[in-house]
Length: 182
Image 1 (cartoon, rainbow, N blue to C red):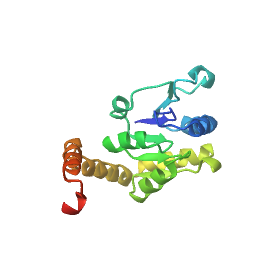
Image 2: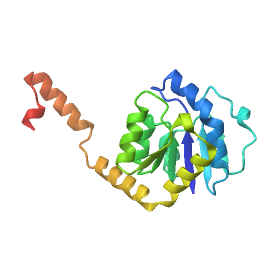
Image 3: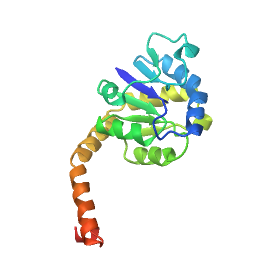
Image 4: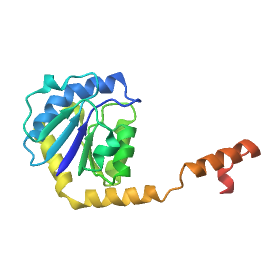
């Protein structure tokens, strides 16, 4: 079993969430270290993985890895709640553990939990035992994975970018509400 913990800042990451991600990182690593699963931990380009060494054999720390390629081999995503990682996790039908750090992350975490694809941890009350317990719960409870796969299927059934282009063209031509006509 392989899981991803990522606190690598994406293009939309805020300075505050990057700083908070680094603050919680030692607790997260400690919480993941005793789980019988392999974890790939991405930390961003600005932090040297050597400062986090040594780690147990089940934890692999990297600066950056492309999420799309990595998530195809994962069973779970543990992350900060950012929209970019959320979209990738949904696209791969993966359950999540969310530690929301700011911006839109608490709302993303709340909605993911409502949909039954995620559990959240409060970064202010984060403890290694809580991380371990929640990660194991999500990994071992089939409904999280089943609901995540169902959500992926729903997203795959949505209209693509071609529809958005068509609607924008219609809007620019007609100069009136186009949603009311659909």
